[in-house]
Image (cartoon, rainbow, N blue to C red; front, side, top):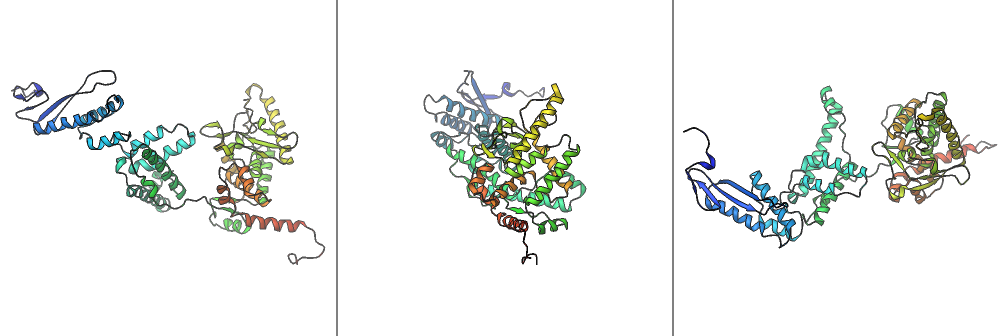
Length: 482
């Protein structure tokens, strides 16, 4: 006795037949030659651990049933089924059930019965070749952060409405934890949860939309027959209504009230105060390297998106002779750089008033002077709004500069994107119809325009009416001035 394992060389092994064998003091094995690989190499496999010859024979019979499923000449299906068999042998798991594989083959769908939700989402996402990079990233984030952690390991064909509902329940529980830590957590807990965001109703709708689209694709391929994500009820996640910064709301904000809405709109007076402040700062020379004030004025008056304003080229402007206009053909994003607008509706021409056209001509002369001063250090991008060396603006820096200017001016907070909302509400107040405003903003649907802006219009219209009344001189006191 040497104590060394003899394995297959043990003299006590007793071969039963050409396919299965067993040591008289151990378990039963089988060996099988599967169809060769695409390169023609031999595919010999063996497996042991069976308690009887009959058990090993039954597994060989299952392999034979699996291999006769494909139609004659369907080499791709033969290789797929062979791959399932090899994977099961390697992983020491049960072989696929021929009764499950045969109908899948007849439907010409994914043959792997153990395909998980996460595996299918990876296959689906890899095949999404026609979507924009930002849409792809949105899908990828939803899958990686919000779907796979909760249901990614569930076999795709076993996914139920209950699983999807549980996923959103766990997202809600995580939201509660984040809120609790923010309000009552220790310093260590707050540090641990730093940067984690509460997932709102609109985001949950986007998560479900990602899952629903992927599962619909699985239905089209015959992998599943029902889409559980379509039957889960969620809060609507509608766009927040735009709210006007009336004098009463400004007073409340100054006294410590919360900002009333995620979408806040300045009155024309507040917008004018901001632009005056920005002009003053720019004129002092302390504005070196910051976003040109004209960019904010363009967004406030005509409503291009921040990235669209950053991507405006001089060749897109008609500012020398009326009618004055700007054509939106490009946008700059912090992640992807220069690219086309987000939709066909985003490619549009917007009119400019004479004063705005004059401001652009002055800006052109100033940029030309900077280009001459920079000489060879100037980067010729052809862009209207640039950094001091002619290179493109970073849209994130535009947002940063705007936020700092608003705070410095002591004005109630809005986002730079809310200047776009101001342009829309001013156009509506001036008598433009919703279709005109939709075209101005480049919305793909008029419903987006209506849902976002009609709520604020009555307040703004009233404020404008009051301002107009003040401009009309009266010899006798009116009821308002008496």
